[in-house]
Length: 280
Image 1 (tube, helix red, strand yellow):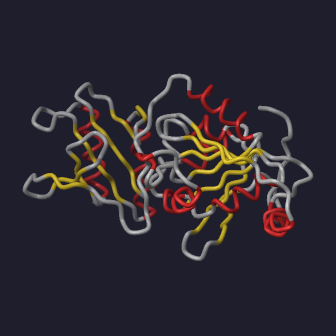
Image 2 (cartoon, rainbow, N blue to C red):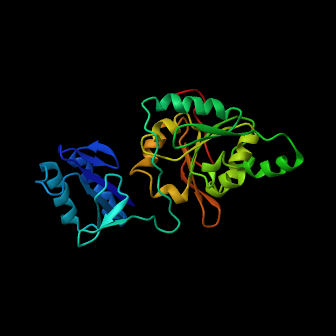
Image 3 (tube, rainbow, N blue to C red):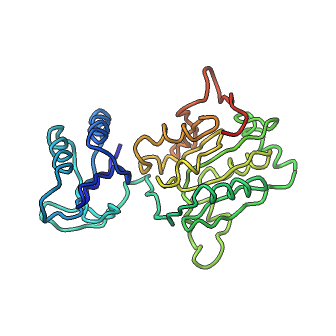
């Protein structure tokens, strides 16, 4: 687990980009300590006296003896060594960072349009908040064979809303529209999503930026998360997504082995559950 804390010159403390009070930070630090995680820390004005709120946060960090990685940049894209030298921060093997996105005040409308597009195919939201659509595949014996595995997970008789968090940055896209192969390289479970779209479910993909989590999972009956992005999601993402979803069924696609792991289900017993059928 990784926690990002920013102490601003105004005295505001940000926890994974959200303004919070020191009690909220303290509770999050307890969670980090229990899970054996680390803290990334950014100070907006390191050469000046720290605000009271920031001092409380630092004292709590020291008291817990938590591992701390200092950043000199507000996006945590670097780390500072013991000599004060800045180094580019790279993601550990098997992990992907959440890309920078266009922050939109109309993000709910952006996703409303994305869900509408997903009615006709697999819709993918880009970081610049444009989207592309992979049209629903035409019926064929090959597609029917491929769809049987998907249908055991989410049957086709009741169309569902399925959101996915995965990389939406594709190789070679600067030269034009991304091809299917480039998209498949970025989204390792693309075939599964295409199959879900084929049997009638509305499927959309976004990158999981904290400013878009609630809007991106609103009305979803199932959420699939790429394991490579899981550690980059904001603290408490599972609860936040569950509150926004129509039916909080959350699955993790584990890149190592290509298996699905159940993170949360909407009801008791085995399999996925869909107790809510109407709009929220």
